Image 1 (tube, helix red, strand yellow):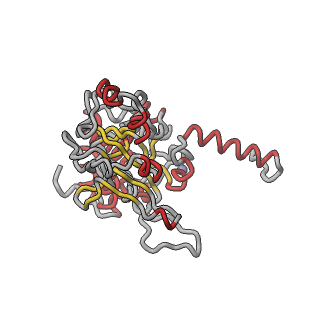
Image 2 (cartoon, protein in one colour; image 1 turned 30 degrees about the vertical axis):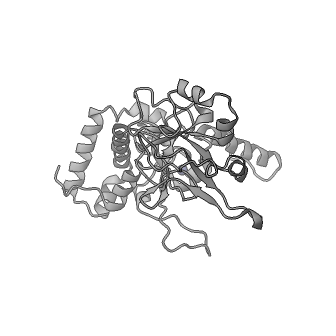
Image 3 (tube, rainbow, N blue to C red; image 1 turned 60 degrees about the vertical axis):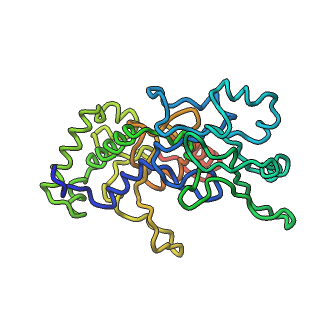
Length: 328
Ligand SMILES: [Zn+2]
């Protein structure tokens, strides 16, 4: 395939970004939009449920850091022994994370002479980090931010359930591009956004070939996961409408009077079929699709099945109360 057979820029970026984590600001301990194979942060309180890498992997590609609450750390007898039994050591692969003012007051690490951590692997360079929000009480003072807060080194790592290794990230991108080409009007839209007929068909063929190589184009499986319709066209996983590839390029229409000029949300968004949650790894092939922005907003983190049950309940209640006549 020639170099010029690149996807139109907006689409290319949209697919590329699926390999990154969601945004995070300075008030939290997470990194902002980095690769999903970055250092994983594991809340110690959920250690039993969520500390293993995905089942087929021996370890996290770039390691992990366990986050322990000050109470758990300082109020557990023989905590070092307990940690050691799990292969953990403060300063090596675990830190104490301060998130409330009470914790900070009660177990102030600076008074103990502790150093804030700053590295993400091997030796973490310190024992703790803090992300305590500002207090509304004047006497209490501003927010407390310690560790992983320099421009070059912001955030300690990513949420564990957002993790995926590089191969998985790549396979997801391949399948998501495959789903673009399965949109009912993909070829026309590719032309409209600058690809020649020859380049678009070359790109489509090479993507299909790679997907075949990695078993990423099993139509029955794609259908069972709500990703394509009975007619093999890409559909929105919630409302089940076949989607137009134009949705990768067009902006969401804003309600009148609420126009945001440089709004960058497009009509189609990345959908996770089984939602991202602790104890599971949702960023994997056959669990990602393209759906309407509005449908994605409705589903949020609840999961599709739960959302549909809730919607049915809403309709039932509206019919029962006489606000709505159910279409027959
Ligand atoms: Zn939809």
